[in-house]
Image 1 (cartoon, rainbow, N blue to C red):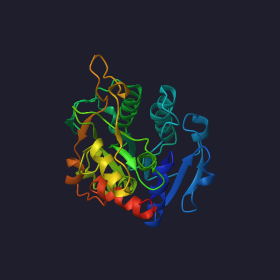
Image 2 (image 1 turned 90 degrees about the horizontal axis):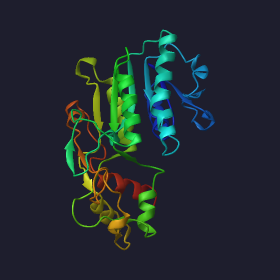
Image 3 (image 1 turned 60 degrees about the horizontal axis):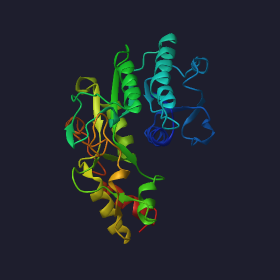
Length: 295
């Protein structure tokens, strides 16, 4: 049995904590208001942006998973979640002389800035010009430069139970397709595969472990393809095509095209032995539609 802290125990962290507990581990969930955590996860009330609340972390800890998320899409909140919080938890572990076997940082593929459908992997340069990508990258650097054995996991768009916004927008007619030209590729991963990725990387022997992994399913897919497929499953009208003026311009360019447009490779993750429950959006959204009776 291992003793595991999930710092920022929200949508993903709660699912992970429940799975780890079921496997026999002792799990603490750190969040400001932990009263909504299931009884399988031990509550630890703390604020990652306030070091004074982190002086009594459970110990000894075998593993720490940092899965905090910004509360809004603002530079201040991204700085708090992905840099200040990371700095504070690492400092607290050091002050408490804690030496967990592994520190996993939940990152994002938004650290990349490719916008023409390029393929990217863990060795691709990260040169995001958005505050979100820059803040997350700063957090990655803190973790990778710390004295702890660290792993950064760059997740694509996470969907799953309780996250039906895309499905709802297609049903109510609010979703729009992008116009012709460069396809807008999307990279997704089902929440249940997210938890399995993190568990896999906890158990993976250190000799086989890399410092950075991209975690997306096997099939980067054009957004239009995903929208049309879900519409067909729902039996509703195809989403309309957006006007050119509704697209975001690329920085330093007069051309109107999607800002984020890349295809992420998960080869390193699959080579480590990981197998997906939902290898593409079709399996993942089929499970969601069936489970929630949305068809």
